[in-house]
Length: 105
Image 1 (tube, rainbow, N blue to C red):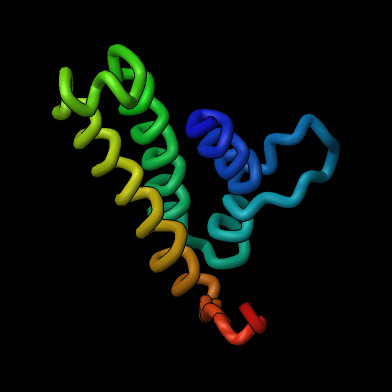
Image 2: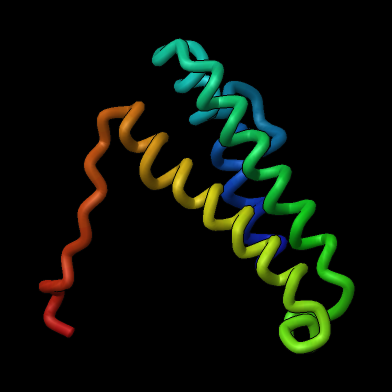
């Protein structure tokens, strides 16, 4: 499930939906904002997170006790990706992300 979620987010970023004229957040960074550095950094962060997840030798449950270094490496790469998307990308696009918890729950 984690692999599928990261891949889906990467597809949203790269516009990789096997459709013509897909909207790409990556293109927005590169063309509209003229910021190849951030675009390349986010693309690299997706790859690093995916590779770190693939490097976990067994199930997450087993690796927590048997190979915590691999779990930590994945966590660090995922944290980097999240920061780049939630903070840097949002800042570059001049977007303010807010949360509303007044939904009646």
